[in-house]
Amino acid sequence: MKKTLTISAAVIAAAIALTGCSSPDASPGSSDGGSMPGMNHGSSGMSSSSAPAASAEFNDADTMFAQMMIPHHAQAVEMSDIMLKKEGIPAEVTDLATKIKAAQGPEIEKMTGWLQSWGQPTEAPTGMAPGHSMSGMMGEDDMSKLEAAQGTEAARLFLTQMIAHHEGAVAMAKTETTDGKNTDAIQLSKDIVTSQEAEIQEMKDLLATL
Image (cartoon, rainbow, N blue to C red; front, side, top):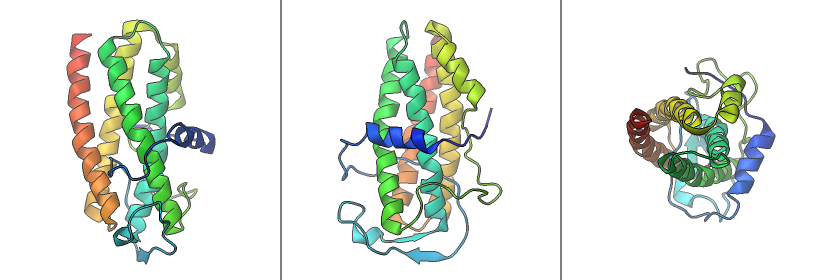
């Protein structure tokens, strides 16, 4: 069920806008991203509002992790928003959607700040290295089905899709943990693995009750 989809800049911008009031010094959350072996880089011009100076060093794996995780998280926020607008959804499922949106929205802002402080583009370059696809992304048909579904059917579809989405995020996060250099990015990747693996189990348990 793993698919890839390029998320438009507008969707990412909207996700960032939703989290504009979040705390900039929130502790590292979770993230997932592919890695790309390469040269190490030093950050120039770290912003006082971004990661501390101790986290100035980064490499290509850190950059790609953030560039890929931003649209990946943006889609999770979009999927959660779709569910929160529906009627007749079990409370446990809407609570989960609220939790996912609350966690991943600020992480989008955090990773965007990192890339800006590193002097790197916030979007992955066109034609990025083969093998660095965003695992677990939903295609347009999947999103349309989620939009159209109602009630228990929508809840089941959301849980099924989000399990696959989280599994992709966990895989990308584990790659960052292994290949990354930036301490904040590595910590975020570890946090993502911990939190999203727990949510995967929670969603499987919920799915079994519907």
